[in-house]
Length: 244
Image 1 (cartoon, one colour):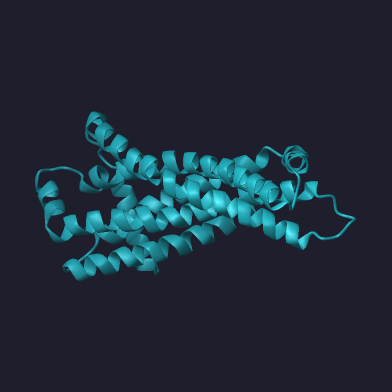
Image 2 (cartoon, rainbow, N blue to C red):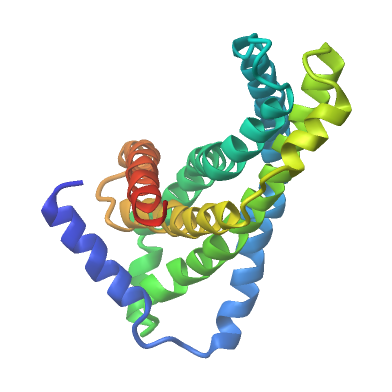
């Protein structure tokens, strides 16, 4: 995204918050988007988080072979890695692929089929009408999905570690409960909020300015996922640098 595109993106965001219609009009759309982004992604996030937690526990156990390091460390490392990095970032990247491509395709198709032009002729603020419900749903549901992913990742680590015999249930539970710092959850939720904003607005921008036909909509959809993933990783670094 060069500076011209970034400027257009900021102007689009400004238009999203300008002259809102009656909020009642948005409520139904917001709940639909919450269902699509949140409820529709639960299964995928559950499977990915559980397996990542299990695999991570096995890898940590494999690397900590020293007799001088207590096995409770396995639980502590799994917990902190899941909360601070893996749950927010991997959830966001998976959602960028699933939701980002859908948002970009939907708005891009509306642009090339001139539905957005029709909305503007009727005097409706099309960026607000199309993007604001997605944005509100994104910044609400992505943090909830990240909390869900954290819990399942730590649970997956428990089952992965205990079933393989790498760590006993008591040692794992002692590890995840010892020296827990609640601030790590605050950092993770700040990341989730920022990622939710990126996942909904970047693909919406790519779709909103599509020109051409079906091929261009597909290219914009691909570009939306790529730019969203790069933006997520860049913001992940910035938020971590600022908060930790």
